[in-house]
Length: 368
Image 1 (cartoon, rainbow, N blue to C red):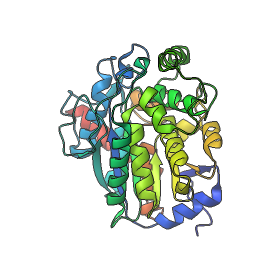
Image 2 (cartoon, rainbow, N blue to C red):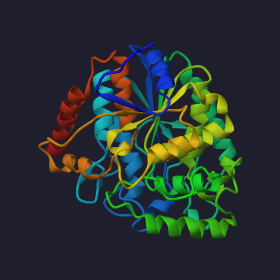
Image 3 (tube, rainbow, N blue to C red):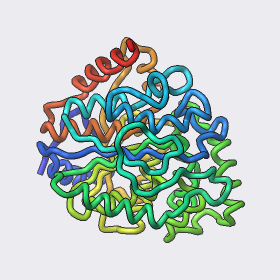
Image 4 (cartoon, helix red, strand yellow):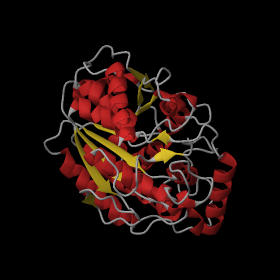
């Protein structure tokens, strides 16, 4: 088992479990997946910064899928951006995937805007606004299809990265984790340095009122929580994690959106503990507007947080330096992709190599 890890990686939580799983994937080749989905919750003005306007948030996930698959977006012109021109974290995920030569598969976890690239289809439809109290259709079916897909992806792979791109997903994560009683307060993340907590709290409170539920009412009914106030990506990825982790290690990649997915999966199948780590970024760990570590402790610190120590502070691009100012922080499995690249190369790939590749990719994208 690994006794130490390179400085490019940090650990929060059960270090023994983290080192055990990293040892299993050290020098091994894995596969990266990204589940893209839409929740109309993202179109509520002010809820999501994962798009230049509320309407464009519906294009963010599909455009990220296209970037990962073919290196450019088709459904929109240019690169998916945050207001202010800050580029999608898919640029960081792309850098890690290219350096590691890792396979990447897209999963349509319920898109209103369908990506123009090949994808796995699990029969999911896009999510409604959670204020309807009827957020996701066919929850059990898409969860079970996720499990089937997870088992299939585990065959002939040494490990699997499960990630997401679903704008508005921190609000649905807040709603689901409150419904399950995982958290009692709003400590989820945001793609903005000024987390719109007041608005998110109001939207979730309205959703709970319509759904006739209170905090902790669905502690043992995670799929019911998703059905009422979640998003389809949560059910699909929970299924994939459960299905794949039966036989291989899984890196669940993302910020507090993925915390909700892990909480769902762990409640349904506690046996995932010991074969799953939560991969994220230093930006997410150090975010003062959220507390992913406290959420992790509430779920179980036996599914440790492993984070990549990326630093954009010396980037020649102000739009990338913005990550150091609290913008974006995570998404598209960028932290997990970096961790997978570092581990699969036995530490030969490091943050400096990934940093240089990000700039190569970004310079190429903005020159087109």
